[in-house]
Image (cartoon, rainbow, N blue to C red; front, top):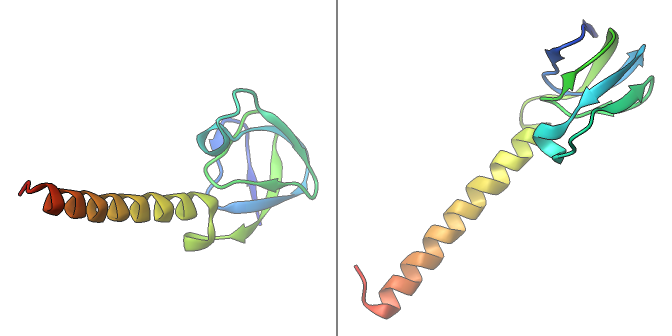
Length: 95
């Protein structure tokens, strides 16, 4: 458990166990406005606590976080794109 003060970025997937705040999740969701969170609400790792002081309990760390899953998907997409381009280039005759 850790306490996060206003304007501090969260590090993991977490759940609020004490307090209430507004969380900026735009890094992952693209939402332009902070979302109100209170006890029991999940918080996406990498979000910014914009107001208040809350206590969190980490629920996801490392490769289990939402941000890590996004990075994995992007890596797979790049790998697939490279395979598709190689296949296309082979058939078109570009080397």
